Length: 195
Image (cartoon, rainbow, N blue to C red; front, side, top):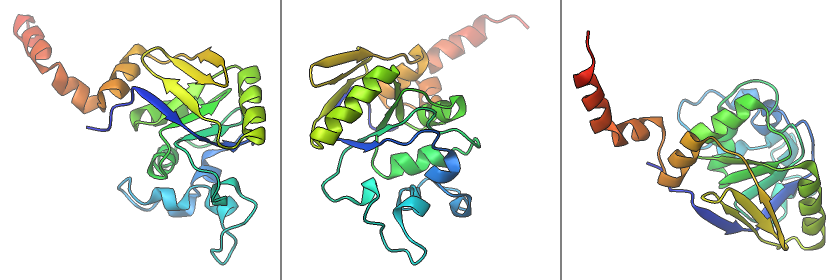
């Protein structure tokens, strides 16, 4: 089981880039591992570090003043290949949610399957969030999964999520945990089935 996601209030790391693909999130050369741990060290590797492995001072994740459990990104986040490792890397780096105006479908599903909440909001809402974060880097956001609301600076925005994935996140379940949670119902159904 994972940590349940109910309500999260945190600061935000803003990355105002559009069309960020999964190879930029986690470059292909780091996909050799078969467990989910350690991918966070290479999140946005080619943007975060130079060829010698030194942090690039202009990249937002290298700014010591920027901390938070939410990544805000431009539209079409997670496009490109279907690698699940992109969600692993973001989660392993300490992010619990990503806010954008549009997610690639495969990335959205991979994120939800790995305990990372993709919060899709209208473009205007995202623009206002970025503007606030430019003025006040420490401005908090609250994500209320039960009510499906993103709140910041007096703004409240509804977001959609499938009821099944919402229940899994609220309870800290993956798909197997969910099935084990309804084991008695499955067994009862199987007893009543005619072959």
